[in-house]
Length: 252
Image 1 (cartoon, rainbow, N blue to C red):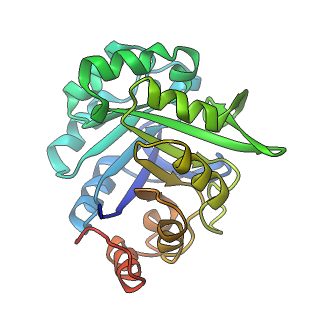
Image 2 (image 1 turned 60 degrees about the horizontal axis):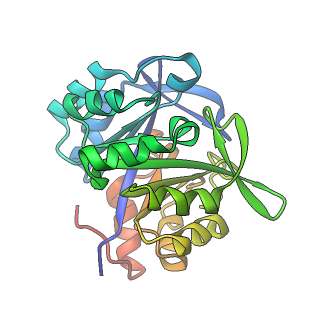
């Protein structure tokens, strides 16, 4: 059985790590390079950077932060936000990112997924899906969770796998920052629909939420922000709780 991963996520806006609730009400929390380095030393299995303002503000993701992070962080890290072209993907990988996440641009131009996978490999190509429940379905949201595309999130997950994505970063807009736990229905539905690894995101408030999602679904990783950034719990504490509940977790 493949060990489950614990991944801290750093939402970056204008060079600072920020956090909000349901994608709004953002507050600054610190320097992304320093925080990523700290998490790497604490035993994070991977790290995710999301430049959450890049798409809306028409900026490229902060290459300098990626370079400095690559010098100090020795676990795989994914960078997303403002990735529109294959050249953007190339620049981020050359700056030191292990994987590149794409969201809004992939929806607008699905061939970007295929091109990235063909040129750099599926293992480098992550598609971030921000999903919000609408009636009895989930819709794909873009532009930092602010735009409802009307696209069925499950059908989109199936399509991105077919186009060559190696991993899906799945965030529930409904549970993001609420701290009541992952969106189990959404996560299980997406995981059961695809064969590639899925990272669950949105809603962690305590360590027990990780083993809950690992035991209820076949998700391969759990991602969180607030509980780590605010020093509520450490990565070791989360891993210890997972192990106590019988989850096969990577050793710190």
